[in-house]
Image 1 (tube, chains in turn red, purple):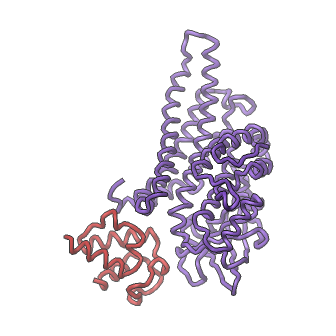
Image 2 (cartoon, rainbow over the protein chains, first blue to last red):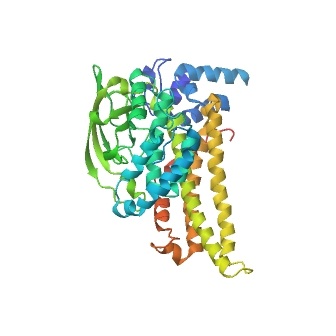
Image 3 (cartoon, rainbow over the protein chains, first blue to last red):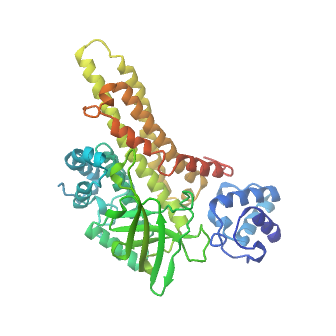
Length: 80
Length: 386
């Protein structure tokens, strides 16, 4: 799952660093993730994993790191 | 000057300052594009500059709502003076809600004690107006920071006692990884790059500057600017601005109403034709009033509800407030102009609306509505409920 998330980040996060080198717990906002780009990452994840983020997960902390995104997605995929 | 230490009558204090100081000088401030120094002096003496700071720290413990009422009152007398109070209060709100270091607490107390006037430098040359992006960076050197910012606008920059500046966290940080920094007057120099000579809000003296600052490293806020922006700076800005615009709209409405009532008195029994336009104007004024009050209620709810505060629906609603209110203001002043006719168009007339109309047009441009709508367009791609 983390590798697929990295693929979506590579496509949509527009980070100034190489996505494959980002640690799971690294702060994506400190690496340059903007709120504008985070919306595109969210849309890319929803398409890739065929899920919809509910209101409760639509917040900055959900997209703080690869690990936090994976946590959120596991909850959604398991619930589906 | 009126003295107050009672936050409940901030609006009445503002009304007195408007009537006695800001109003009588408004024509000169507008004509010459000068800073309304006498208004700011009156704000300071009456405690308006320190209003939001707690009583324990030397302020009045006023809420954003209290300040919004004062700003709206000033909108009726001198929109430039009201806008300066609004922009100052936005900076104070950031200090009160996010200033955690001992140094920032001490600075806040001095803002209260000395009545310091605070300005803002968020936009930067070369970032295309996106305040969530910086080129300049905080350079730490031991216990000091250094930064240099090319600011296309610092409203009343030359007259402020301190400026709150956005910058990248470090020279290595991404453009969106920003912090807010307090720069005190003794810690910076300003080199003016552009002159403020605009259609309206002429007294805000919003020239461009190169700002070079060096100060205590603890004057850098610990909270990321992105969080301060979404929780405080953006909602408080839009609430205080739209409250100012509401006051301007109410003044235009009052002049139109008086004009129609004068006509009615000349011929009792016959409803003047312009009374129908006045009824239509009342609809729009009520829309603006209820829009602003609704947003203020939502802001109070968000203060007590972290989930609401962090939600996308809250962000889009606070953006919509600014776009909707700024459009309604222009509509209202234009409708008032149609009612007052040549008496509204004339500059030397009790019903003159020229300055209000010129000031009103600035509302849609200061942080351009197109940019705010573009942000909302993006957020609405994922927003689930309003």
